[in-house]
Length: 332
Ligand SMILES: [Zn+2]
Image (cartoon, rainbow, N blue to C red; front, side, top):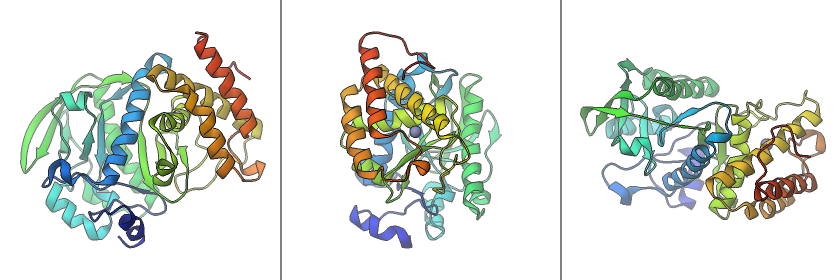
């Protein structure tokens, strides 16, 4: 646990933690023994973020260029845990057998299929997953992370063909589960343990830090941030930052970055409106956030200035309220 201990104590959590270099996923798994009472603060945080992302992805479907199979499953993987905790995670959850179910969103296809926290997926349509032990042995963070993403993608790919047959390990016994999905906007979101107040899109996932979640005051504000970052992935924008915290895109002309940021702001507001979140949360949030954190020199800044952002948001909110359809290349 080491580096995570201070934060862990701060939130009074003494369960094994998922780790991973600089930005670590911030959750402990469901406790199969203690049931709901064993839910940790961080697991609830994971679920909170996932629920808002789920709602945005589902409601935004008519706006999105290509459908993505939404299930309502949140995963955890052996490789995400500190080496010292892995034997416990294997003994308690069987995480050496396949990707584990960290949580299930109520009312989702996964919930309807009967999947529950603590389940482990053994195969999908007869195809097994790459060994979690093998993935956990990979030292290079970007490589093991990509391998985990590949296992999640294996399930997504199967679901694109319709309902999938899963073999599931539950409390030591195997069972078959038929899992369906609903078409939605791409909505892969992960909470990462970090003291940096930030969120970003990797091109495939939205990563929000625990510090950002702490900074956010409501689910409406959470929808502002997730909507913006999900928009980057939905619209196929290249990542502006790698998961290791490196600012990318410095070779790209700033006007192109600004154009994408404006587009993500506008599209994010459309997702929020579709999902029924309060659009009035957007401008005050950007004021508060950019006023506090947006101090980087312009050349390193990947997001529009506060003034530009307010103007974009105000125009798009007015357009939404006037019933005007989304215009992909319109706006300011
Ligand atoms: Zn952005």
